[in-house]
Amino acid sequence: MSSFQKNSLGWQWSKLQQRFYEWLTLKDPNNTDTDTSSWFDSPIWEILAKGIFWLVVVSLSVWVLWVLWQLLEPYLYTAFKSPGQSQQTRGKIIKEVSASIWVVRAKKAQERGNYREACICLYMAMLQRLDETGIAPHQPSRTDGEYLQIVGELPKPEPYQILLATHQALCFGNTEPTRSLFQECQNAYDRVEY
Image 1: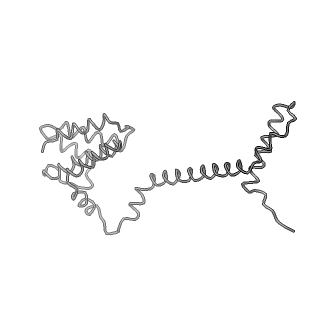
Image 2 (image 1 turned 180 degrees about the vertical axis):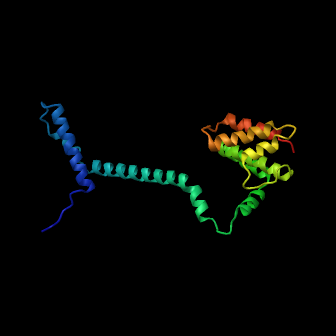
Image 3 (image 1 turned 120 degrees about the vertical axis):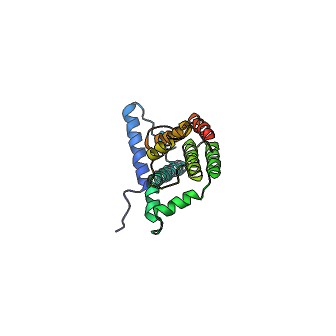
């Protein structure tokens, strides 16, 4: 007694063809020509159908993995960071990047069309400038609201406020990053006093 497979890809394709032919017959009962099915039985069509099927399956799998990675990346970073790396250590790592390096990163992101990253890099450059000048030494726990209070006491707080508000809107709001938004951030950063 031999066993056979009832649910293979070839079997599914055969059933799909059969249903298609039945549908054609129902649509046009006068059509008695059964030769139309012969070109569907060609091995080329079967290979083509299998290729398209696997291309769709692989594409969907890659897309699902990419979306999951985008969603889980922050949590994975937190879960797998070394246990000895505290908020202070992370703050020191941020301090090691100068404002000019953040500006270069912003320009590269802008050239790639990644305006969200470009605006955030300018925001980070501003925070670094505040740290370097001693106006607001970097503290990992400091919020944008606290920075707004600090820069509110400066003679020209507007450029800082623009960068802080943009950061808030991009990270916690529904604002779409655009070229004009980046240009506004660039103009604001250029007006930040050194």
